[in-house]
Image 1 (cartoon, rainbow, N blue to C red):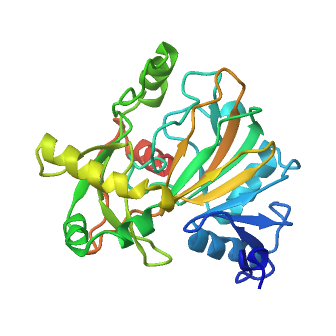
Image 2 (cartoon, helix red, strand yellow):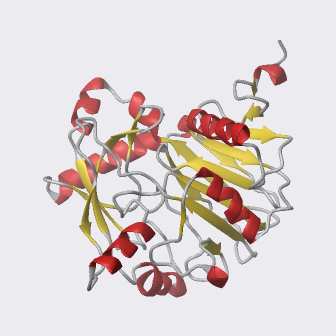
Length: 317
């Protein structure tokens, strides 16, 4: 068998998937994404996503904002970001490098500051720079699997507070004032906090995954020093190079990732070039710990009646 043929995964119906890295990521070849795809193809994409964690698609120039959202809805209920306004009345989350909040250059899992964080994110490259601007994903299930048993036993018992009001400027040198201002005025326009298990069980695969990233404020029940050191130990396991895949964007690429089993990082190395990507976000389930306990809301914006509370909860998944 040739090296090329051995890199092709044909387990999922008619999908032809080229493995991109050894432990995460597959490029799905010869497919045009559309809301009109047969349900069997959507099922195959879901199964491939759980297995590969991230799926890459080249040449999806036919997708506009409306079709992007319609395609995303085939995977579940799509939701807007809880604090960042969507463009043009859509539910899309936009990252525009020309604006203050458009560079997601820190390791994170999307929107973990709510209890039922998104299960799937679908990102489309609208304007891609001539160089730089890659995105890197890490496999949080494999990170847990490769922990020594003694550390697994400890991690299984830990819980963390996640919040959108985190130290955005940490580990960033000479961060632009407009980025800090955008974070304070837009991203933290309403403060959310949730308590999550550090290890949660994937609702489809049953795999255990580390649930960490930059939204973690502290590990519950530990001193600041202990919390920081344990967080760094576990987070560094997630981002080991052999646990990652790096994607070099081309115009009109689409990437789908399983937000329940990954973290990601957008590399900020493209200077003042234009970079615009838009994301469709699919509602997720409340995370479940290894002992069956469920994630819980710790803080959410004030609401004056039950209808407003329901609206806030449904919009923050």
